[in-house]
Image (cartoon, rainbow, N blue to C red):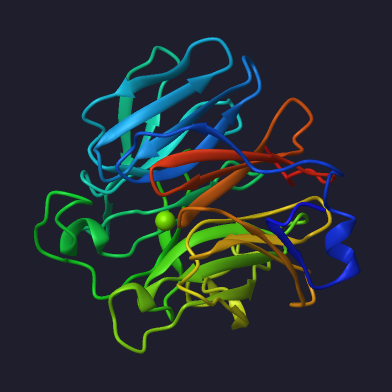
Amino acid sequence: MPEAIEIYDDRMSALLRPGASLQELANGAVHSEGPVYFHEDDSIVWSDAHGNRLLHWSPTNNVSVLRDPSDYQSGNYRDLEGRLVGCSSGLRAIIRREHDGEWKVLVDRYQGKRLNSPNDLVVKSDNTIWFTDPPYGITEPNQGYGGEQEQPGSYVYRFDPASGEIYPVVTDMVRPNGLAFSPDESLLYVSDTAGFNIPGGPHHLRVYEVGDVGVARRRHRHLKNGRVFCVIDPGQPDGLRVDEHGNIFTSSQDSVQVYAPDGTQLGKILVPEISTNLTFGGKEGDRLLITAGHSLYVIDLNTRGVRL
Ligand code: MG
Protein backbone atom coordinates (compact mmCIF):
# COMPACT_ATOMS: atom_id res chain seq x y z
CA MET A 1 0.00 0.00 0.00
CA PRO A 2 1.35 3.49 -0.72
CA GLU A 3 3.19 5.14 2.15
CA ALA A 4 0.82 8.09 1.93
CA ILE A 5 -1.95 6.02 3.46
CA GLU A 6 -2.03 5.02 7.12
CA ILE A 7 -4.10 1.98 8.06
CA TYR A 8 -5.26 1.47 11.64
CA ASP A 9 -8.00 -1.09 11.00
CA ASP A 10 -8.58 -3.81 8.39
CA ARG A 11 -11.76 -2.06 7.33
CA MET A 12 -9.59 0.71 5.87
CA SER A 13 -7.83 -1.71 3.52
CA ALA A 14 -11.17 -2.72 2.03
CA LEU A 15 -11.87 0.90 1.07
CA LEU A 16 -8.63 1.31 -0.88
CA ARG A 17 -7.96 0.60 -4.53
CA PRO A 18 -4.72 -1.41 -4.77
CA GLY A 19 -2.01 0.72 -6.34
CA ALA A 20 -4.02 3.91 -6.26
CA SER A 21 -2.34 7.02 -4.93
CA LEU A 22 -3.17 10.66 -4.45
CA GLN A 23 -2.85 12.73 -7.63
CA GLU A 24 -2.81 16.51 -8.00
CA LEU A 25 -5.35 17.65 -10.60
CA ALA A 26 -4.93 21.41 -10.26
CA ASN A 27 -3.22 24.11 -8.22
CA GLY A 28 -2.94 27.88 -8.16
CA ALA A 29 -5.88 28.75 -5.91
CA VAL A 30 -5.39 30.94 -2.86
CA HIS A 31 -7.54 28.59 -0.76
CA SER A 32 -9.35 25.66 -2.36
CA GLU A 33 -12.75 24.69 -0.95
CA GLY A 34 -16.12 23.21 -1.81
CA PRO A 35 -15.56 20.62 -4.58
CA VAL A 36 -18.64 19.44 -6.49
CA TYR A 37 -18.74 16.87 -9.30
CA PHE A 38 -20.56 17.01 -12.65
CA HIS A 39 -21.02 13.51 -14.07
CA GLU A 40 -22.37 14.94 -17.35
CA ASP A 41 -18.87 15.87 -18.54
CA ASP A 42 -16.68 14.44 -15.76
CA SER A 43 -15.86 17.95 -14.58
CA ILE A 44 -15.33 19.49 -11.16
CA VAL A 45 -16.28 22.90 -9.83
CA TRP A 46 -14.63 24.22 -6.70
CA SER A 47 -14.20 27.45 -4.82
CA ASP A 48 -11.07 29.52 -4.49
CA ALA A 49 -12.69 30.72 -1.30
CA HIS A 50 -10.10 33.30 -0.26
CA GLY A 51 -9.25 34.19 -3.87
CA ASN A 52 -12.91 35.16 -4.41
CA ARG A 53 -13.27 32.99 -7.51
CA LEU A 54 -15.12 29.89 -8.61
CA LEU A 55 -12.97 27.43 -10.58
CA HIS A 56 -13.68 24.64 -13.04
CA TRP A 57 -11.64 21.58 -14.01
CA SER A 58 -12.37 19.30 -16.93
CA PRO A 59 -10.36 16.46 -18.49
CA THR A 60 -10.11 18.41 -21.74
CA ASN A 61 -9.71 22.05 -20.70
CA ASN A 62 -7.90 21.59 -17.40
CA VAL A 63 -8.56 24.69 -15.24
CA SER A 64 -10.72 27.71 -16.06
CA VAL A 65 -12.34 30.47 -14.03
CA LEU A 66 -16.10 30.05 -13.82
CA ARG A 67 -16.93 33.12 -11.76
CA ASP A 68 -14.84 36.12 -10.72
CA PRO A 69 -15.63 37.59 -8.27
CA SER A 70 -17.60 34.83 -6.61
CA ASP A 71 -18.58 36.82 -3.51
CA TYR A 72 -16.41 34.47 -1.45
CA GLN A 73 -18.37 31.35 -2.35
CA SER A 74 -17.34 28.43 -0.13
CA GLY A 75 -19.16 25.08 0.08
CA ASN A 76 -21.03 23.75 -2.96
CA TYR A 77 -23.53 20.98 -3.73
CA ARG A 78 -26.10 20.08 -6.40
CA ASP A 79 -29.84 19.97 -5.94
CA LEU A 80 -32.17 17.28 -7.27
CA GLU A 81 -32.39 19.10 -10.64
CA GLY A 82 -28.61 19.16 -10.88
CA ARG A 83 -28.34 22.89 -10.25
CA LEU A 84 -25.27 24.13 -8.43
CA VAL A 85 -26.14 25.44 -4.97
CA GLY A 86 -23.50 27.34 -3.05
CA CYS A 87 -22.75 29.10 0.21
CA SER A 88 -21.94 32.74 -0.40
CA SER A 89 -19.83 33.88 2.51
CA GLY A 90 -19.73 37.40 1.05
CA LEU A 91 -23.44 37.81 0.30
CA ARG A 92 -24.24 35.96 3.54
CA ALA A 93 -26.64 33.84 1.56
CA ILE A 94 -27.43 30.51 -0.07
CA ILE A 95 -27.24 30.96 -3.83
CA ARG A 96 -28.18 28.78 -6.81
CA ARG A 97 -27.13 28.75 -10.45
CA GLU A 98 -30.33 28.57 -12.47
CA HIS A 99 -30.66 26.51 -15.64
CA ASP A 100 -30.09 29.69 -17.67
CA GLY A 101 -26.77 30.32 -15.89
CA GLU A 102 -27.98 33.21 -13.70
CA TRP A 103 -27.14 33.14 -10.01
CA LYS A 104 -30.03 33.67 -7.62
CA VAL A 105 -30.09 34.35 -3.87
CA LEU A 106 -32.37 31.75 -2.30
CA VAL A 107 -32.20 32.89 1.32
CA ASP A 108 -30.14 35.41 3.27
CA ARG A 109 -32.18 35.96 6.45
CA TYR A 110 -33.71 34.16 9.38
CA GLN A 111 -36.45 35.93 11.34
CA GLY A 112 -35.70 39.16 9.46
CA LYS A 113 -32.04 39.27 10.43
CA ARG A 114 -29.12 38.59 8.10
CA LEU A 115 -27.42 35.24 8.27
CA ASN A 116 -23.81 35.23 9.49
CA SER A 117 -22.02 33.76 6.46
CA PRO A 118 -23.12 30.32 5.23
CA ASN A 119 -20.07 28.07 4.89
CA ASP A 120 -21.12 24.63 3.71
CA LEU A 121 -24.27 22.80 2.70
CA VAL A 122 -25.86 19.51 1.72
CA VAL A 123 -29.07 18.85 -0.18
CA LYS A 124 -31.29 16.17 1.36
CA SER A 125 -33.27 13.70 -0.76
CA ASP A 126 -36.39 15.85 -0.22
CA ASN A 127 -34.52 18.77 -1.86
CA THR A 128 -34.26 20.74 1.39
CA ILE A 129 -30.95 22.55 1.89
CA TRP A 130 -29.10 22.08 5.19
CA PHE A 131 -26.30 24.55 5.81
CA THR A 132 -23.93 25.81 8.48
CA ASP A 133 -23.64 29.48 9.38
CA PRO A 134 -20.41 30.37 11.21
CA PRO A 135 -19.34 34.05 11.14
CA TYR A 136 -16.09 33.70 9.16
CA GLY A 137 -17.31 35.97 6.34
CA ILE A 138 -17.75 38.70 8.95
CA THR A 139 -14.70 38.11 11.12
CA GLU A 140 -12.07 37.03 8.56
CA PRO A 141 -11.11 39.74 6.01
CA ASN A 142 -10.25 37.20 3.30
CA GLN A 143 -13.55 35.32 3.55
CA GLY A 144 -16.18 38.02 3.05
CA TYR A 145 -17.11 41.67 3.15
CA GLY A 146 -17.31 42.10 6.93
CA GLY A 147 -20.32 43.73 8.60
CA GLU A 148 -22.23 43.19 11.80
CA GLN A 149 -23.31 39.83 13.11
CA GLU A 150 -27.11 39.86 13.49
CA GLN A 151 -27.80 36.27 14.54
CA PRO A 152 -27.25 35.42 18.22
CA GLY A 153 -25.22 32.30 17.42
CA SER A 154 -23.74 30.04 14.76
CA TYR A 155 -26.39 27.51 13.81
CA VAL A 156 -27.14 24.76 11.34
CA TYR A 157 -30.29 25.59 9.35
CA ARG A 158 -32.78 23.62 7.32
CA PHE A 159 -34.12 25.62 4.37
CA ASP A 160 -36.87 24.51 2.03
CA PRO A 161 -36.49 26.31 -1.32
CA ALA A 162 -40.01 25.25 -2.33
CA SER A 163 -41.75 27.03 0.54
CA GLY A 164 -39.05 29.45 1.70
CA GLU A 165 -39.30 28.05 5.22
CA ILE A 166 -36.09 28.26 7.26
CA TYR A 167 -35.34 27.28 10.83
CA PRO A 168 -32.32 26.22 12.88
CA VAL A 169 -31.89 22.51 13.59
CA VAL A 170 -28.61 22.68 15.56
CA THR A 171 -27.91 25.50 18.01
CA ASP A 172 -25.43 23.94 20.44
CA MET A 173 -22.22 24.15 18.40
CA VAL A 174 -19.57 26.89 18.48
CA ARG A 175 -18.48 27.10 14.81
CA PRO A 176 -20.42 24.53 12.74
CA ASN A 177 -18.73 24.14 9.38
CA GLY A 178 -18.90 20.96 7.25
CA LEU A 179 -21.83 18.56 7.30
CA ALA A 180 -23.05 15.28 5.79
CA PHE A 181 -25.93 12.85 6.22
CA SER A 182 -25.57 9.12 6.85
CA PRO A 183 -26.70 6.96 3.88
CA ASP A 184 -30.30 6.64 5.17
CA GLU A 185 -30.32 10.30 6.29
CA SER A 186 -31.16 9.29 9.85
CA LEU A 187 -27.98 10.95 11.16
CA LEU A 188 -26.35 14.30 10.48
CA TYR A 189 -22.61 14.75 11.08
CA VAL A 190 -21.39 18.31 11.59
CA SER A 191 -17.82 19.52 12.09
CA ASP A 192 -16.95 22.24 14.61
CA THR A 193 -13.92 24.30 13.60
CA ALA A 194 -13.86 26.63 16.60
CA GLY A 195 -10.29 25.51 17.35
CA PHE A 196 -9.21 27.46 14.28
CA ASN A 197 -9.21 30.81 16.08
CA ILE A 198 -10.77 30.31 19.51
CA PRO A 199 -8.18 29.10 22.05
CA GLY A 200 -9.39 25.82 23.53
CA GLY A 201 -12.29 25.70 21.09
CA PRO A 202 -13.64 22.38 19.87
CA HIS A 203 -12.15 20.60 16.85
CA HIS A 204 -14.47 17.67 16.52
CA LEU A 205 -17.38 16.12 14.66
CA ARG A 206 -20.76 15.92 16.31
CA VAL A 207 -23.54 13.58 15.23
CA TYR A 208 -27.30 14.17 15.61
CA GLU A 209 -30.39 12.05 15.09
CA VAL A 210 -32.43 13.65 12.33
CA GLY A 211 -35.86 12.13 12.96
CA ASP A 212 -38.84 13.57 11.13
CA VAL A 213 -38.04 17.23 11.65
CA GLY A 214 -39.86 18.33 8.51
CA VAL A 215 -43.25 17.73 10.07
CA ALA A 216 -42.33 18.19 13.70
CA ARG A 217 -43.91 20.96 15.68
CA ARG A 218 -41.81 24.06 16.03
CA ARG A 219 -40.46 23.41 19.51
CA HIS A 220 -39.25 19.95 18.47
CA ARG A 221 -37.40 20.97 15.36
CA HIS A 222 -33.92 20.80 16.84
CA LEU A 223 -32.13 17.57 16.06
CA LYS A 224 -31.95 15.14 18.96
CA ASN A 225 -29.28 13.39 20.99
CA GLY A 226 -26.32 15.34 19.68
CA ARG A 227 -22.97 14.01 20.86
CA VAL A 228 -19.30 14.24 20.01
CA PHE A 229 -18.57 11.60 17.36
CA CYS A 230 -14.80 12.03 17.14
CA VAL A 231 -12.11 14.57 18.00
CA ILE A 232 -9.90 15.58 15.07
CA ASP A 233 -6.15 16.00 15.53
CA PRO A 234 -4.01 17.55 14.26
CA GLY A 235 -5.77 20.78 13.40
CA GLN A 236 -9.50 20.75 12.98
CA PRO A 237 -12.04 19.17 10.66
CA ASP A 238 -13.70 21.21 7.93
CA GLY A 239 -15.61 19.51 5.11
CA LEU A 240 -16.71 15.87 5.30
CA ARG A 241 -18.54 13.21 3.29
CA VAL A 242 -20.03 9.76 3.93
CA ASP A 243 -19.59 6.72 1.69
CA GLU A 244 -22.19 4.08 0.79
CA HIS A 245 -21.23 2.00 3.87
CA GLY A 246 -21.65 4.92 6.24
CA ASN A 247 -17.92 5.58 6.72
CA ILE A 248 -17.04 9.21 7.39
CA PHE A 249 -14.26 10.93 5.42
CA THR A 250 -13.22 14.22 7.03
CA SER A 251 -10.60 16.83 6.30
CA SER A 252 -7.92 17.58 8.92
CA GLN A 253 -4.56 19.30 9.04
CA ASP A 254 -2.48 16.38 7.82
CA SER A 255 -4.90 14.16 5.93
CA VAL A 256 -8.36 13.00 5.07
CA GLN A 257 -9.23 10.93 8.14
CA VAL A 258 -11.59 7.97 7.80
CA TYR A 259 -13.96 6.80 10.55
CA ALA A 260 -16.33 3.84 10.71
CA PRO A 261 -19.94 4.55 11.71
CA ASP A 262 -19.09 3.17 15.18
CA GLY A 263 -16.51 5.97 15.63
CA THR A 264 -13.39 3.84 15.11
CA GLN A 265 -10.66 5.67 13.24
CA LEU A 266 -9.85 3.40 10.30
CA GLY A 267 -6.97 5.30 8.74
CA LYS A 268 -5.69 8.38 7.02
CA ILE A 269 -5.11 9.45 3.44
CA LEU A 270 -2.20 11.85 3.85
CA VAL A 271 -2.43 15.08 1.85
CA PRO A 272 0.59 17.36 1.33
CA GLU A 273 -1.44 20.53 1.99
CA ILE A 274 -4.08 21.23 4.64
CA SER A 275 -7.30 19.65 3.38
CA THR A 276 -10.43 21.76 3.55
CA ASN A 277 -13.17 19.74 1.93
CA LEU A 278 -13.93 16.73 -0.22
CA THR A 279 -16.57 14.97 -2.27
CA PHE A 280 -17.03 11.78 -4.24
CA GLY A 281 -16.95 11.96 -8.01
CA GLY A 282 -16.02 10.02 -11.11
CA LYS A 283 -18.49 8.23 -13.36
CA GLU A 284 -18.83 5.44 -10.78
CA GLY A 285 -18.75 7.73 -7.76
CA ASP A 286 -15.60 6.05 -6.48
CA ARG A 287 -13.10 8.90 -6.83
CA LEU A 288 -12.46 11.02 -3.77
CA LEU A 289 -11.96 14.66 -4.78
CA ILE A 290 -10.09 16.68 -2.16
CA THR A 291 -9.56 20.42 -1.93
CA ALA A 292 -6.44 21.29 0.06
CA GLY A 293 -4.40 24.46 0.31
CA HIS A 294 -3.86 25.82 -3.19
CA SER A 295 -4.81 22.58 -4.90
CA LEU A 296 -7.31 19.96 -5.98
CA TYR A 297 -6.42 16.28 -5.51
CA VAL A 298 -8.02 12.97 -6.44
CA ILE A 299 -7.60 9.38 -5.27
CA ASP A 300 -9.47 6.33 -6.59
CA LEU A 301 -11.16 4.23 -3.91
CA ASN A 302 -12.92 0.90 -3.59
CA THR A 303 -16.04 2.56 -2.21
CA ARG A 304 -18.54 5.09 -3.48
CA GLY A 305 -20.08 8.22 -2.11
CA VAL A 306 -23.55 8.06 -0.70
CA ARG A 307 -24.64 10.67 -3.22
CA LEU A 308 -22.97 12.55 -6.02
MG1 MG B 1 -15.88 24.82 5.33
